[in-house]
Length: 212
Image 1 (cartoon, one colour):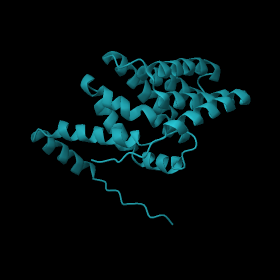
Image 2: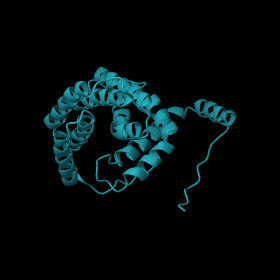
Image 3: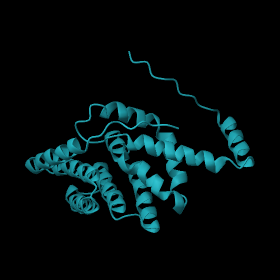
Image 4: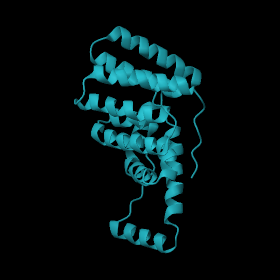
């Protein structure tokens, strides 16, 4: 049986007291900034592409970290100067929200990230990925037809290609393959998977070391 490391929780009264003391010391924002940076590095080390042997253990770890991810996103998306770091954190989390069934929560976060990214003028690929993930989550939630998502996913693929982001392109192709298979076009889905997997293998890198 796998032994998982212990996780520590505070009573809400202790948390409230700690927040008050941090604010009194003028250290709250600095600590939240470190927290956001740490979780952005953590999610950057996660490869949601097909063929990753550590995919399921990573999803389990991110599931445990959902309260921390929410806190980091909430603070990061609240001010223009922090949006880029929050955008980096959220980008690969579509896999967690899709595979673990958190469709509505994921859609809400991506919609907010999409709006904030446009507000601060992030590069075209970043708002593009958030937009198509919102559509993709709506497909899995059952509130959007797969065909409507596919058009947005193809736009996202073009954005990534224009930006020279092959990793992002591979992710978008793989999610496009999933929704294509949902409407029964398995030959096209298989072609998307083969293309995305080949690109991810070329771009595969050593796991990042996450440090606080």
